[in-house]
Every structure is written in C-alpha cells, then in structure tokens.
Amino acid sequence: MTDITRRQFGKVAAATAALAGVSLPEFSLGQQPPVSRQFPPDFVWGCATAAYQIEGGVHEGGRGASIWDVFSHTPGKTYNGDTGDLADDSYHLYKEDVRLLKNLGVGAYRMSIAWSRIFPNGTGQPSAAGLDYYKRMLDELQQNGITPYVTLFHWDLPAALAGGWQSRATALAFADYAGYVARQLSDHVRHFMTTNEFACFTDLSYQIGQFAPGLKLPAAEVNQVRHHGILAHGLGVQAIRANAPAAQVGLAENAKVCVPVIEDRANMEAARRATREENAPFLTTLLEGAYPDSYLEREAANAPHVEPGDMKAIGSPLDFVGLNVYTPTYVRADGSARGYAIEPYPASYPKMASPWLYIGPECIYWAVRNVCEIWNPRAVYITENGCSAADGLTAEGRIEDTDRVMYLRNHLTNLQRAAAEGFPVKGYFLWSLMDNFEWADGYSKRFGIHYVDYKTLKRTPKLSAEWYREVIARNAVV
Ligand code: NOJ
Image (cartoon, rainbow, N blue to C red; front, side):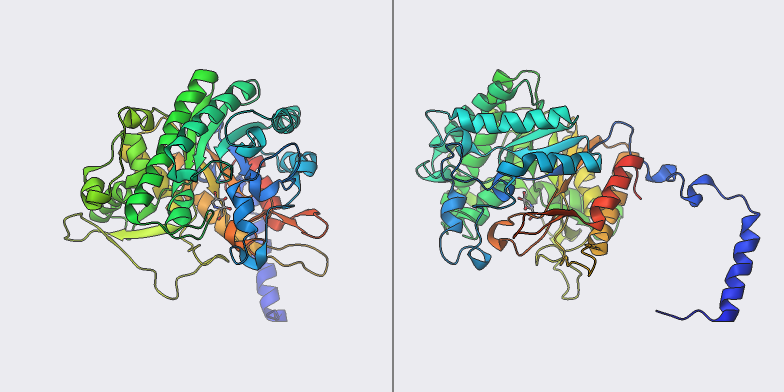
C-alpha cells in the first residue's frame, strides 16, 4: 500500500473542504444510480441452477438414473471422479436455497426438472414422488414471492432411453414428458424452457465425447443427433402449449455470440452474418423453421434426415428466446464469400477460471442485438451469465470475489445498453445461485455467488451476492 505523505494529505483535505461547498448531482453522492445505468421498471432479476448440478438425492423419490449418473461414475470422465450424487443436496436443502434467493431480493428463479424424477424410465409410468418434490419446491418459491422459470431438459437424459439422442424416439419421449409436466405444473409455472444449450448435449456429448454419454460419432450421426435435439424442442413447444395454454414458452440457448471487432458498419454486418452461420444447426434453424441452405450445402451427404412435419414443429413460434451468454467470438469483415472471419484469441487474452471463459463483456450486448436484428423475437431473456473464479476464504471466512464482480458488472453495463437502446430484453438470470457440479469439471470450478463448503454443505454469500442484492434493489448497474 502507498503511504500518503503529510503534504499530500494536506492537499487532499483542502480539496475536500473546497468541494464541501459545491452541490454535486445526487447520484455522485451515492444516493441514486445515474439514469444511464438504470434498467426498465419491470425488468426481471433472477438466478439460475440445474437439477443434476445441485440436487443430489439421486436414489430418492423413485428417481431413475440419468446418463450423467452413468458418465460421472465411469472412471476418468470427470475431474477427480466427481459425481452429482450429493452435489449441494438441494433435494433436502431446497428451503434454505429459497431463503438465499429471498435474501438477494430476486423476483425469479430459473431451475430445471430432472426428467428421470418424473419418468424414471424416460417414458411409461410417471412417479408421483418425483412430481411432489417439485411441487414442494414450487410452493416454497410461491410463498416467498419468487416466480419460477422452468427448464425441462438440462442434459440429465434418463439412462433407460435406448440410444439416447441418437434415437428419434427420444425426441417423441421428450414431448410426452414436457406435456405431462406442463399439465401437472400449470398452476405453478408460467414460464417454460424446453432445452438448455443444444451444442453441449449434442456436439460435446456425441462428437467430442467430453460430456455424457461420451461418444465420438462421425458427422452424419452427429447431425442426426442435433436434429433430434431441435425436434425435441419443437415437439416440446407444441406439447407445452397444448397442456398449459397460459404458459410462456422459450428455450435457453448458448448461441455463439459474434462480436464485431470494431463497431463500424462493415464489421457489424459481418457479425450479423456470422451469427446466422455459426448458429446454423440450432438457433437459426428453429427461429427460421428451415435449415439454412449454406448449412445443407456444407454438410452435403452428412445432412440430417428430416421427416415430414419436422420443420414445422421445429419452427414453432416462441414467446421468448433465452440466451446463455458467457464469452465472445470476435468477428471481422473480410473479402470471402461468406463475408466474415473469426479472430483467434491471442495468447495473452484474459480469461476467468475456466479455460474457455474469455472475458469480453460487450458480448451480452451483441448477443441481444444480433438476435433481435436478425429474428425479431417477441422477448429475450439472458437465461445465464456468470463466471468461474478461484474463490478462496479469507481468515475471517469471507469470499472477496472482486474478479467475479468485475465480470458481472461489466456484463450488466453492456446489457443495460441493450435495454436502453430499446431491444426487448426482459430479464437476467445469474449463473449461478451457488457453487455446484460443473459437469466434466466436477467441483473444481465455482460459478456461484454463494460459496458451498462441500464437506458441510454450508452456503456462504460471496461479495458478488452482496453486490447483486444492491443491483436488484436499485434496478441498476452498481
Ligand atoms: C452452461 C450450462 O447451462 C450450465 O449447466 C453450466 O454450469 C454453465 N454454463 C457454466 O459452464
């Protein structure tokens, strides 16, 4: 720390005294955020989690196994052999988790339902005990004035479904499950998301082999898996609408966020083109109701087999598009036929604790803007944004995650810009309410704004939780 000399101190004191007589705008006294940092009055603030990452209780309430149980118990698949067997034990501690939400002052909670708690075998006989767990959870939220936003599929596919996403029958089974849950929970839930992050449960899982079920299939089979994923989404939308007509329906997608390297006309146009192309098999197709020609040409003989009626289902209109936003893809205009090039990250580009988590806060602005300018959705939510950090406890047991606050504050500054420019961004869900099972990274990466001691399961608010509470209270970037 720098020592302040007596002379410097004298100067500072004199300047402060001089300022005392000056009347400053109210916000600079820390009373009110400047209008330029304010979010719209009805903006929804929330936190997000997913079933397998927090629940534990894998053998309780008649739950069937999911492919993540199988995968995480296979030696060498997750960091340290970590599994979701216990996770944060939210299956038992859910009331405590609702208290955390309440203390933050959030109006909404994005959670997911474990398909294999509802249908232990993926199809067939539903389990009343599984549904009851979620009803208890939803009652608790309701009593605390917190609106649930429910994801129906966050990667924990019932292990009993033969062939997993390689089988078209899985998409049909998803629609049955989605319709059943929508009907059973329509009293409690007004916002449903079908699926979470297509590329993760298709490409990472069936092409790269990094996620469950850990396969490395050739391109044609991967494209078919992708097709079954978006078909499940589309059939799911139809099933939810048929069973819960008052519900708002969308999805949560980690669209690749194409950010113009320079904010000028040519690069902005390149980023828009790139957004369509880079998201071709997923968001582009379901928002346009057709595979882009460029994708079909590129994949040629490996293109997916499509049955009559599939594209109509896949293109079912949505009430909102949910975007999970973490990291930018920088794009510039070039003279090529497709009109853009992707910039590689220089070696010194800053990252958060996960190796893929490059920091580029303007990505949240461009995520909203590009999606709105290309497809004009009715509403957009940020269904996830957040970061891993190397959280440690101070001697007093605090977690001073100033790096996470930096990450979040800069993203919200850019999201506020999107809202102020009139894009229909309606809400923001911070990933995550608390540290949890980070898939193949096990418990080695912490994304929570509450610290979880995995020995005692004690939850402790980090500095970022305090900061987020203030953001919510003032409905502004602070
Ligand atoms: C996306 C996923 O939806 C979530 O499950 C994951 O934990 C976070 N991103 C962080 O990687």
